[in-house]
Length: 107
Image (cartoon, rainbow, N blue to C red; front, side, top):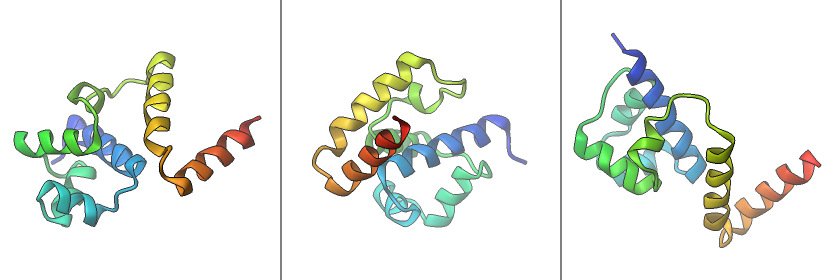
């Protein structure tokens, strides 16, 4: 039976994985677990070991605090998060175009 913490943590892992643009297969390979294990973590049906948690944070470039932050994000957090990731997409023209079009559509 999945716990609320497992479910929320899984959602956060999935969110940050998608933000980084990793498929489940690629990300599972990077952290050294099976794809079905990652799927179970992301759906809240399994919990990860501490070494896997550490690898997830390192590869996703997030702190454990960011990963375990289940409350609605503050405006300062969201702004800092956006700025941090804008730096990361500077060298990826495809992602830069996507972000540009999203922001352009807002104004």
